[in-house]
Image (cartoon, rainbow, N blue to C red; front, side, top):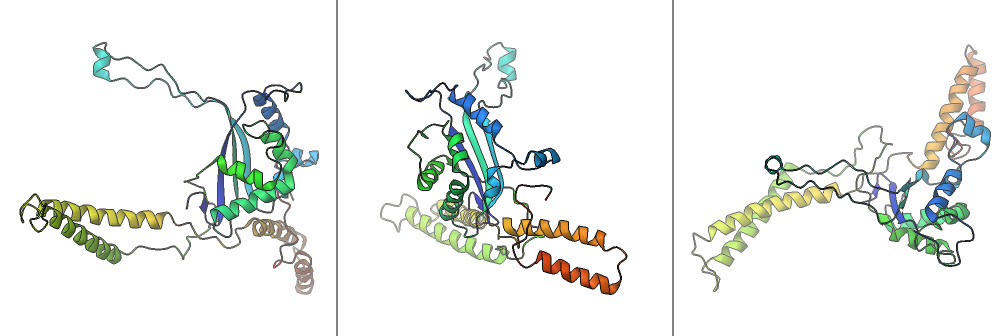
Length: 321
């Protein structure tokens, strides 16, 4: 399923940036693209470095309980790989005209990309739940960013439902997501068998061949060919039907989403990071401890960190917890 794989939603949104403010909206502001770049530059990032920790500021996305990754970026021009290649023969004869035109965007675009938990596997439902949560935890930041974009006028997007609808209008399907939480190949993937493909392809080819043979044979009142000549379109139809069946089965199975990995949701990942960090410190602190002391210390560790419960866990958006 496009955009959903492995229990995660891979959201890709492209929103056109305004060329200018509407009448009465200028209020001494610079052009929308400049205001957008300034707003994005001032948004706090995740605490990925010791310096970021010292600042005490962290991205508002960390308040979300579903966001694994999120990014804003401005796309104001397309990549240019040089002139289009000319035909060498025509070029030698002096008849080739190299193209000097290049494709340009009519306006800059704001890219919003995010990966978040999609436990239900429903594209509409999981997207709506996620965007509603974002609106609840970071409405002010979202308005500051998207107010520089087309159709996000003052008063036009004021509720979570309106924000959801706005994002859906600008969403692109993500057809090649990067799924990174499966440590080993899952055992529950749907499989195709050679026997099943052979039987299905054979029956489909037989049915298509028989149909087209009848259409072109004298048994059909308007059939243009004789009995034997009608075998040619029948054979072509049979081969095409068999190939089409195999291709459709590959497409159907290939479109199925990867199953959700165990403990791959954000809360579980953060819990795992917490246990990893705290247990490492536990090992360091108890080097050389006797059996009784080690047993007591480990019991205290379990009571304090509660491995089977979501809390306590690593803070979202922080590398150094």
